[in-house]
Image 1: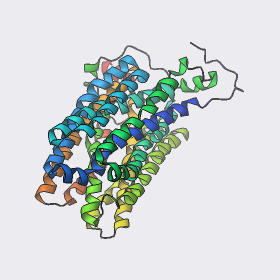
Image 2 (image 1 turned 120 degrees about the vertical axis):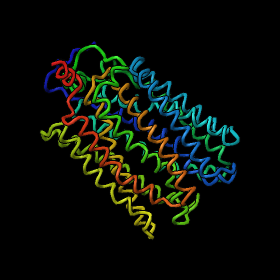
Image 3 (image 1 turned 90 degrees about the vertical axis):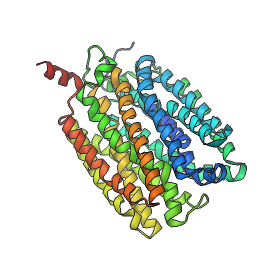
Image 4 (image 1 turned 45 degrees about the vertical axis):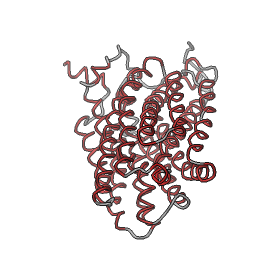
Length: 430
């Protein structure tokens, strides 16, 4: 263990941003693996004969596994640490992803998706725990925004790379090839990640910066006790309301573009790239904005919620997209909504490390992730039913437009001041 005493002239290192880059890459891989089913939906439906309801059921079982996985993996990562917890989850989901290339029929595909959901549930608990270990509070939203931008890079790469592989060698090869490439990240993670105090490439000055927040000491809150803490629900309820909208974009946006604008596997790549480039910008800008406000003296409460309000307003125009005839105007409206989601999410994902001690962050993230996945299960059934009955995405986009304002209202009602949990507990005792 090194001391953080250092001359003021020593230059602060930047190794923490290497860790952020690793988290960015893992999240990109995570989203390639999960989004492939949406991109390949027309081909899979043609080859395997799925109905809209069966496709929705496959998405439902992925979400169910994601919900279960978040609860179990979040606690596991708090126990074994980010390094090995991330490695275990990543290995499991990579094997499950590659197994998609070996299955036949709806049931086998649903089983593979279930296994993928269990493993992928480890991505954000591990990533956010790593951010809590490596970044001071004033940098966390920016770091989360940057690594969360990997989701959009994955969403950009998928429609560019996967259709080319699938059309050339078949959709089964696409699953196996993309999974094999992921092994490179696992080797890099195990080689480069350590806790800051144990890492030889972290300077004394950088370690002092990482530890510059006031230390919230005390025993860890028992896992079941977290369910009785209001701040857990300040994170979980907005996740329940907003995560399903992102899932809808991932799993049904290619289908919407195909049905509404006549695009196919060869032509919906450019619109999706534009949409997810806008999402990338939203993720980084959303994290930067609240971090900037905090550096200017705003409270964490005001900075996070003001930024999230702007994000929620950016999503509202999505309610009109079903009635827009011009493809690229629709792309702009959808891109603004996905950018708003990612900016909102960058701030929401920061709340567990704002509110809880580091030894509880992954557990809280897991609980919130489960809530979001349950919402995803419901949206899958909702979208499948709406499309089977009416064939219109209008009701789906109406729900999407309202979700973020409702989520922000819920957050403010549950935690008006975003007070750290130890403060809230002390006040409740008093």
